[in-house]
Image 1 (tube, rainbow, N blue to C red):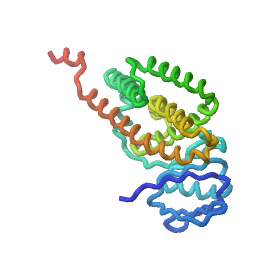
Image 2: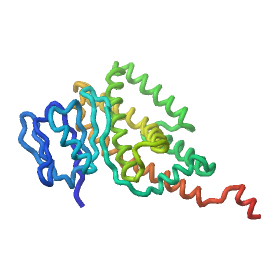
Image 3: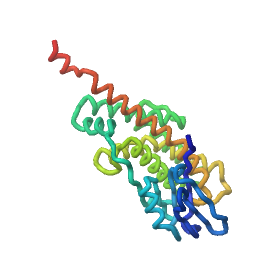
Image 4: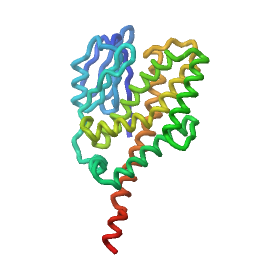
Length: 262
């Protein structure tokens, strides 16, 4: 089993990027040529407009590689992806939850419980997600004001929110869920809200741990990669738990169904 490689590249440093047989060939300014086997290539993140290689990015998308484009200041501009079309049990369950009360309730309970679990990961334990987010924002506001880091935290949060979107896209694609449509948009929003306390806390942690480091996408390349590797399995497990909850709900007789069989 090969290890998946994720690339984070500054667009203005690309001198050459081509597909050379079974490999992606890249040369950055002032660096030697490097080759990455296509079979091990997972995700490619480009920050800033690519100086060269735009056609290669489209060709990689055709080979079902996920391409994410950030602006030079770290704002998520878009994603290129060509997922495999396949039947998705989870998508069917999500569509059923739109008009089945039992599935809708199971989905609502999953969402609240998942949010509370995410808050617990950053040390916030409250009885409901509304109280939890208020508590987290209050703590963040106090700490950021004391350290005069509000502007920097907003910037880093914006970048980590973009990384969160990358994770969500990869997870949904792996589950066979289209990247557009009502159910996709809704589950994307829910997963984004579940991840909110995680990326808010991660942004603060990086700023406190690196007070002398300038807040730029290039300086944060490593931390953004580490954040993606940490967040991906968390959200993937979260989506798996949703499918289990919906499968249980669809197999459990409702109160009305029990009355009909008496």
